[in-house]
Image 1: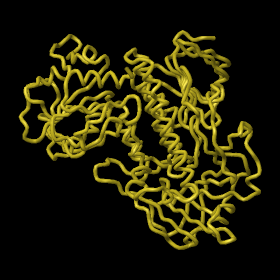
Image 2: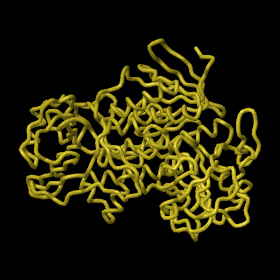
Image 3: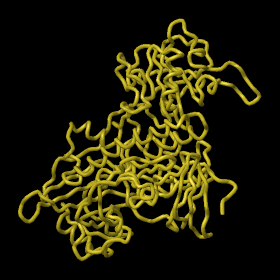
Image 4: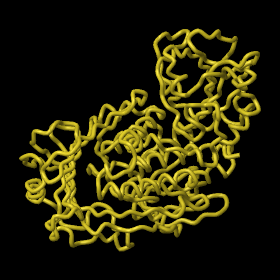
Length: 554
């Protein structure tokens, strides 16, 4: 039976990726439903690392406070080989980066995201499974089965965030090439009573019995909220690793289950063998056996059906890259779908999702496979660069279809690069300093004009309106650019301010000029996901319109 109030988008899967996709669509006014085959949220601390870039994205969405309240800081990693301590990894980022690394159990991440989604008016439809779908040029017809029986849903798009064994991916016939690690692993959420400093992950290895470094015995412990609580992972003994999960019949051996349930005695035997300090495990909340594969789709969708997260790429959990990459898939896709559904963007904008995100997925799969064998230190590059890459702060779309031409005279970020934060921005009325991310928060396309070109009417340059209607100020965004656009003017401390309707912010510490390499009037067009779409110096009205059209996929 087809409902009269059919939504624009159906999201399948209510893990962190699906919840992010639905939340980003809903906060932009897009109607959507989200279905998950599980009857309730699972209490498993699977993905626990939160990368700084993900926190920046949640800041942009206006929800980072709830995450920070629930998470604990991840300060670094202690590494041991054959009982001897190696160089300690300190997770210290440059001063301009607003967030550090954090640890939060996946069930807590899902709780925050699901609560936010409910506030936006959408609830997860639990115990509801996608049975099949067909698509045509105008939309997708999906058949759902759930507590109320079978239902046919017609939407304009379908987004599959349904994990490693994705029904959406299989039905689309997407390639999913890769391989699997032969070993099975134990995973548990326990309390450890050792004397190691809190806030640090611990990686301990011992060489094989033949004395070589091939397939070393590995213990990995990552701190969780709660005194002495860690998520521990280690190789599973043969008696626990024999069984396979029914869903692994598709050839993708990835995820929890598929073996006996590890007990504290199983965990303790590995700790006795590998821990760098005497330790006893206790207070287990849950445990499981899991297997790891590394695969990526040959494309991130077809037509009006897209995939994100584990449905598109799976890999070892080292470096906490998987969930964070999937969340950023969802953010990249959601703003593009919203503009396409609104009629503000051509189909090419949604098509750019694959062009931008699949290279990121390929890089993450390759890097995490290297890390699984040799740790983070196995990655090439100087330590500072390696750390920024782990924080996902070096992701760039410079070679993507939406990036404008580079500014040869600019020393800062170029089109396609992450838009960095900065502090010390002060408005005339509110005298307390703001961060740039305060200005960007809960806004989509943002044009930041730095400086005023001599003799230029900045309102005319930026398409700022001058009329007032009964509904409020008309800033002429739709007329000038074809889609909503927030604009502001950033001036150096002593620069004279022009007469303008633009919000004016003073760069009182010079941080904006330094972070963005701005020494003369320059326009910066910032995308909804926090990357630069265009950098134009000197700015002209024509170049700004062309840059915005490129951002919309035109």
